[in-house]
Length: 548
Image 1 (cartoon, rainbow, N blue to C red):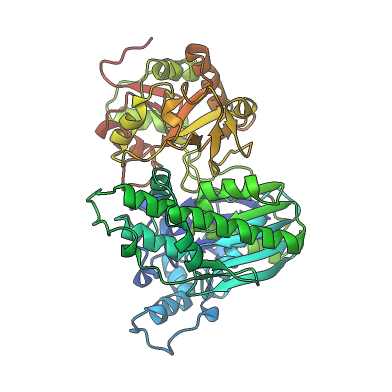
Image 2 (image 1 turned 45 degrees about the horizontal axis):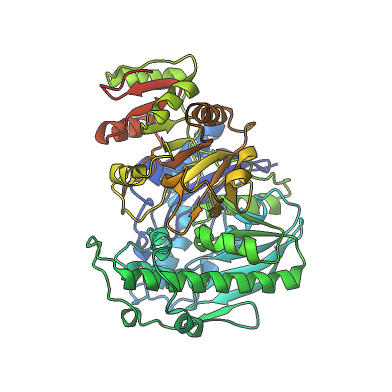
């Protein structure tokens, strides 16, 4: 039995995860501690930056010291990189990035004194992504697809997990990359690379794929389970947008729609190729591109697999977990599946009370918190919800959330104003798992908010806040046994409004990480027009908002 610390540091979203005896104990991202979005810049010369605070917290959570670790799994293998000799000043920076990766054991020893450098194991980046999917999923075997910007020398992996070993079937070599292509489009549209790709997905819903044939020529699937991505002259389709200008028009939406549609087609075609070679009933997915919930849903709806499971932290943060799980398996531990994304920090009621007292805020401790919050939501108030352990990954899943009434169309603009976001951005619905099929058509259950669902007839008018312009919603289903308090809240809201749905969007403002610490929640509440804050068992109301 082994104690294994997983580390992601090489590209972006630095993170740490701890696996003990094959059980996932903790996982979190450095941004939640540093309050720097994505933890660091996604540039080669930031490869030395480690998730020091995240790693230290993971160890503290389990009562471990660095000396107790049997292995440290680093989710990148510099031995696989083809560099330009030893030139660390080369234009592509690859030599410098590789140098930093090779020095990771020494960096880790310095950051976490007591770590034994000879216990650091390099895990290939896409193998770490793959393990974060197939080993964390609750299935004995599966086909596995990984798509992201890049790893050591590839941008994609296709394989099969047999329950005992991983079989590699295809890997697309760089420079061809669906993830890098989508990143280039993100920058062309004035957004931030390796950060705002989900904004492109949202913008795509406002356009039509008028350039689809051109992108079918530029992005092609090959016979061996890979693909080709030709250089794309983006300005031929729409002018570039300067960051911060928000000058999008129909041409930009049509470009986003065309690329999004072609991305879906390529992933679907590669999923069919993989199914033909594995015969597996289940597909597990990871990599940053697997956060594209529209593409995921199309694979589920039109693809050959009966089940599609996506790692909740599908981006690079998840490779810390995948690397740790991979090494745990190699060391003979029986790896247990991921049962929840709530793997981060939590505070006791007494600790939360102390935070409120220090902040000199009036608060109450309702006998029934769910009922009290439901009263606020039914009165069309917006509630900051801070409960239990924080989520691992980019989605708020009812632990660090902003909650609102989905029945008022104006709440979408209101929430985007509160968060400082673009107005074309959607917000998501949260619903009890047993009620979801009445309202949403799509892959259910959907506990991690990684698919889009068609809103059934008659419901779009009842939940306009969460119904996107294309008639879909990125639903999150809530299991009563796993989330009893949120389940009671949903029932209490339905009792007051007749609608069994609550708006759930992340508790943060634009450009800032999701709230993690209670101090973060108090700062967000104090600086935005949120009506109430549910902090553990306590409720803080905006002055002037009386109890029902």
